[in-house]
Image (cartoon, rainbow, N blue to C red; front, side, top):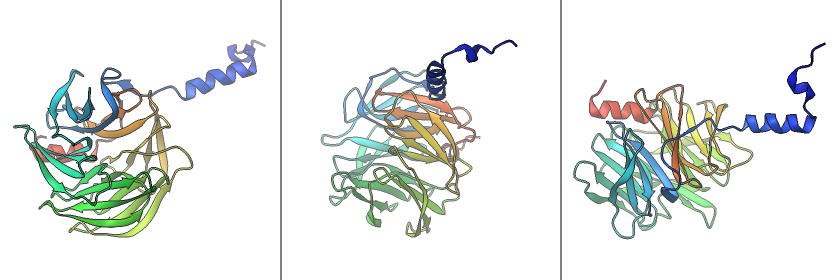
Length: 303
């Protein structure tokens, strides 16, 4: 009988081969390595398909990355401010979670003017942002030293209030496509929570959607079907979790410290992820467009 090629390989070599194959990255580089600092975060996509991410070359900057994968400094934030999550509120405005200035900053894309949309000294460290179509912003706010956190609601008038106190290290956050649910994860505790979301930004009916047994978590975004794409910081993965709380897919990344994610591209199915250990962005293709990409299409009036 003719032996298969792999049957002639020593067992331990075969195990090594298949193990390395199993963890092979499913992503491609979008920008060059080590252009961003270890606080590489963001990202978000405008109506023309350009990607914005924070802390390019040095902390306190916002980069704009063209469709040709070329990054350059778009603007520098005010002294004392360092960006984290970015979310577009309309076609020409994005908001930045300023974790050193305890602010939510507002940026006019056309004029590059930066203003303080909300300042709250009681914020620990504004981390990531989620936004509804009518301008209600939710801000995750971890206290890494104490292992605690909370969620703030920032009204369309720029007024802040705590809507989810007494949580763990709140980090990734997003709104479901029907805007009836707010999702937030806790990096250290490895929990993903769901809340009922009211029209005024109030939260209720907190429930555990999913708990990971290992690894960390960072950014989180919904696709148009309601699936959550969760970056597994330190594990080198993006986990796709269904609205029912089941992990339906895992994407392996080149870097291990996956910090955040957004959707863009021609059909809204290109995922851009920031890698803090590699100081760059990677991409992969999703099966459905992102919620935020559909929002941008609506903002810009494009079909």
